[in-house]
Image 1 (cartoon, rainbow, N blue to C red):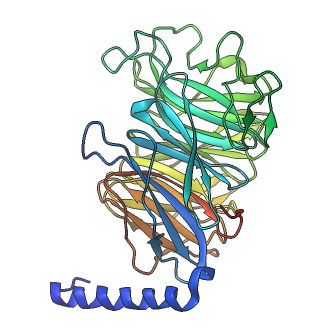
Image 2 (tube, rainbow, N blue to C red):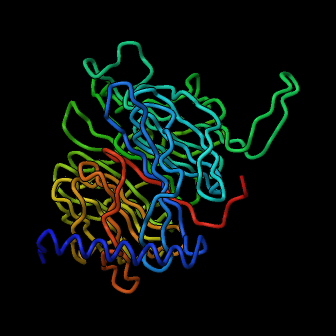
Image 3 (tube, one colour):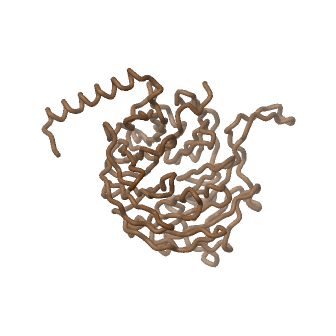
Length: 408
């Protein structure tokens, strides 16, 4: 339905007053989650990115910024973020500075910068947290000859996360909980380079990362720019870093994989193929992957997530600005429907408190689309007031439940 401008303004004003009244009357107890949206803020070549902090209303899914939002991202062009498993820290990856910035999270959702750590490689592009480990994907390995003009393959680094305050007897310094240590050593390296056995000339660009819920295995999707094909690499996670599974031989994964996710049981892995417009499924057995087939997605799928029940999968399609919903049965996907989002969705997430709301981060739209999830059939309904404003060119999101944090 389309409204004329005057009618549209009246509707927007009425909706805004209603939502404002709900928040005013019920106070902060109506907040069910805090959502952290990174924006690249491309106002200038040297401008820092920003982080919007949005609070989610428990009854309607409506999102609004907290009073002190946004916060500086601590670097240029933030492209990924993740929260610690105890929900007390946010880690933001700034691509142009090759940094990971740790923020402590206050009980009111506010961010407090703590530490900045350099990634081993060049142009970090994805991050994941599992237990007391943080994993980061770098577009290029830390070689002096690597650049956009002369690319090389990417790499993975593992950073241990400090569990609690500890004192170093040699330096008498303290390490706060949530701080990142030095990358774990893989042999003589503090990163694991992506490579094809016997094909050293191929350039492999990482595109996504996921860790099984058990924390024992990690999977990385990558695009072979030399052969224009896709792969998934499998690794086991140990105290000294990563060990390649299957002799380091990856599994074929379409043409141009763009994102990867696991289901809550760790039994299945799903990969979006941006070139073919598909979602590929794999079963997991002792870390090894077996193809399950594919399902059609929209144009240029860019992100995906499995809901916490394991019954449904959602794919953000960047080119046609939609979300595709699927039911999952023994790993196989059946399409439910598709739903319109803002322009160019590039990230997707589900609220961690109730698993009742789904959000997409819309890069060119400069906003966040919100949906209510029907737990019986996986269908989506627009939440009140969607889409919600974000800063220029939002790139990623992470979320924490409300009332899980100590006061700051």
